[in-house]
Length: 285
View 1: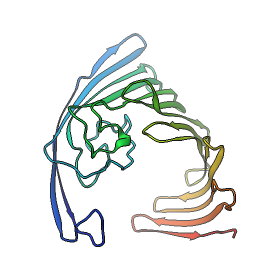
View 2: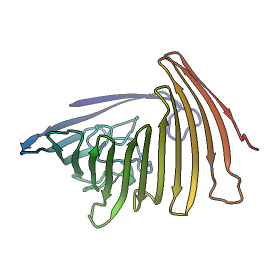
View 3: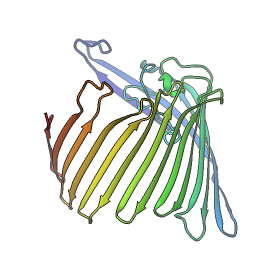
View 4: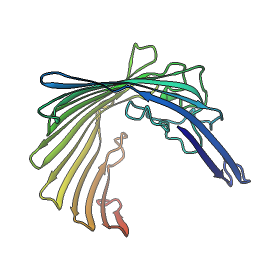
């Protein structure tokens, strides 16, 4: 794969852009390969797929060293895994990974899967976001474990281990259950080291009255400071050409001297024409 990107920029009173027009051309080249392997037993089908991606960028890149970028196993093999718009990832790198999946022959909705991946470089790159760990000669180890227990229940675990393989920098555990008309997801996330400093528990639940009417409740609790951050309650009406919703949002502040911020939003969307939203700011002021 050969990728090109052209950026055109001009800025006024900007620290990062010149006042005169700037035109830049970027390029990155990739060779990728994978070897799908399959083994079928009496009750299961097993898949094992090792893969590599070698990348070479003959140009440089903009300085994104202080930018926060959430790289995970799900986007590790993406060519724009750093989500950068103005350049490509600098230098030479080798991304390696393996995927394993085991599913039942009589029910493909039940399976167990593991993904692992990491990145190697010939030298460190200072302009790559520091918290991604891709700027180092050996990046962190990215991985995930997924288990589909049934058509209506699944559990997934995403993690990141630092490049010395002695500390988990991120743990993310989520479970989704569908019970009749109720669809609920519970997620726990913990971040340490270069990734950040967070520990929270969240829930998102949706109840469908029918194909056109549903209500959703969302909340998140910061376990680091034992504090609930927000509550969201959303009602939606949907049909083929219209979505109308009413959203009640209550956001708390860590400073207990400040009152919670409460808003009521009304929105309506006409497909494929337009969308309108009205914010009733500080509804209960």
